[in-house]
Image (cartoon, rainbow, N blue to C red; front, side, top):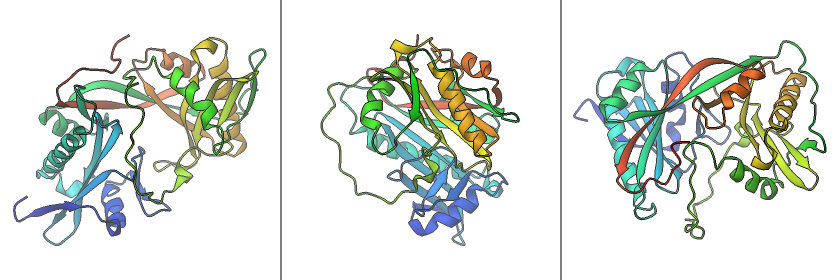
Amino acid sequence: MGNEYTIREYRYTDVHAVVDMLNAGGHSRAVVDGAWNVRLIRYVPVTSKKAVAENRQGKIIGYAYVADKENSFIVETGGGVHPEYLNQGIGSILLNWAQEEAVRINQNAPAGVKCVLQANIFEGESEAIKLFEAEGFSKVREWAHYEIHLNDEPIKVALPEGMSICSFDLDNDWELVGPVMDAAFTDHWASYSLPQMEAEQEELEEAPQDFSYSNSEGYCFIMRAGDEIAGGILCNAKLVEHKNTGRIGSVFVHPNYRRRGVGKALMLAAFSAFHQNNVRRIILDTDSQSFTDSSKFYTSLGMNIYRREFLYEKETRTGREIRRLEK
């Protein structure tokens, strides 16, 4: 980066400087969480690779991460540049670093499979959009962010016949719920199957994490149909970007139980839990072109779009496309 700026590996002692830099534009984009990690609006694994850009005085003016999103063939990047240092080539150099790191990660991907590097960018981030498009990234999907203001108490949950709802035990229910989630998401955009890759997983040193920004106890529910799990909902009560706002992170229904009111009952249960705890604004995001028409479902519950987000993607290794990209 010449004599003006340098790029180096992120150190844990950089955490406050990075968060201050990311929030310099006056918008809450990051916090220092309870485990001394940079916590962004979107979840980023603590094992991700990170880099910072410094000016000549040692001030951090840029940050980027690269995370292995799916079996080393889908890699994600993100970050930011201090507003006072935009259009000086820092973002481009950080993005080139990210692309090089993605190619290294792709070496662990299944043989013959197409590899991509992805980034999520909000509609209003025009400088970021120009940067990624200049680097050969293309917009492949649009996500809509929905909100609802619970000024009145939500209507009571009408349970589908023969079904019951209970709290999601976040310590013990995953083995029961995991297969239901897998079945629910098989017809979503970019779902895939790699049955030949079951065994080996690299053992990583366990890093400290702050789970208070993850699924929140008391806001997550399971719908049961006798001994079977029909669906579930996972919610967050603590967010980086907003105060007094709750987030529905995932609602899923097993294909065998769709069109029976399961999803609606789960959403209303979450609304009720937030309202009882004086959380009045609820948000979520969903694929605008969802194969399951999720947008219609959320608007039917009184939710409205408040912003849009774009998924950008660039091929980093040629190969066979194994994701579901069309209906």
